[in-house]
Image (cartoon, rainbow, N blue to C red; front, side, top):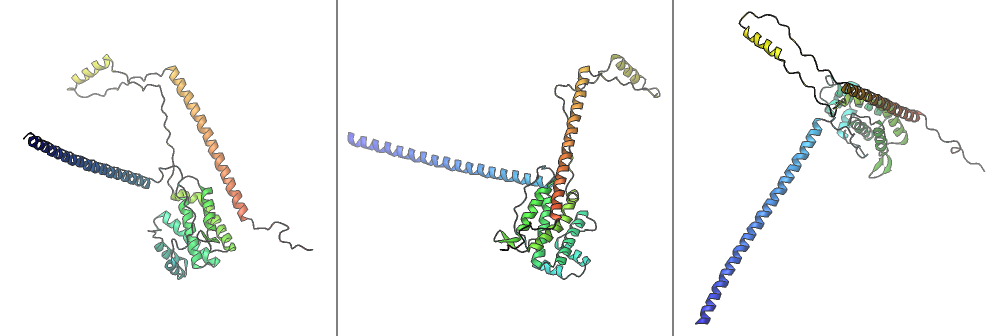
Length: 335
């Protein structure tokens, strides 16, 4: 009897423990699922927040292109044939017989709104019309004309990307893109232009675009202004004089005599508080130091601008000189 009772008791106890273990496992599974769901929700919320933050920053940058004072990096030089003007567009431009027809077709292809009313659209249209006339005078093919216009468009975008001066960076970018169409090294560059055509195209862009680089930048970029504000540390803001007792009595008398006809009264202004001598000396010293620093900064900026203009003019004069072979190389050796 005792053995049966103990075995029955042990069986009931084991069954209750098994049920308790199964309940614990169910609760653990629920906790895991809830933790996974919360983690997924937090990841999703973080992703949405990051995407919204990135979108907001991009929208802010698009709204104010002049907010970033650092010039953006220039794109990598690549082959730009058929980039903006495809084969159908070039056939339409080839059918034009005069400059007016060319301007109308080009304004439609470049999606320019109304050049008669917009100064920027008119300047852009003149830039590409003269470029097409130059390509026709040089006898360029459709591929060469499309590449020349795309090269000029990319150069113009690099110029107006920032209101700051980047003429040297733009010139390096222009020469690198130009060499992408003069050397056969696929897929990085192709031999689309001959050597004489490359030199002619470079002379045209230097004489027409780089000589008016600042004018294009003035028309197409916002003007940058410096707002300078100074805060003096350790100085207390000026305090207003409190009303004296005599002024209070006068105001009461005026209120009592409000029933009688109004009379003109002289406004009494409290005399300003005279500045202490040390504050006046400190203010004058700070003003003189700031003026000296501004003069030095202005002189430094003028020297740098003058140096950059001299370097650019020297490069332009070097490019305008005819290509000459060094002496001794063109002569044939005689035995």
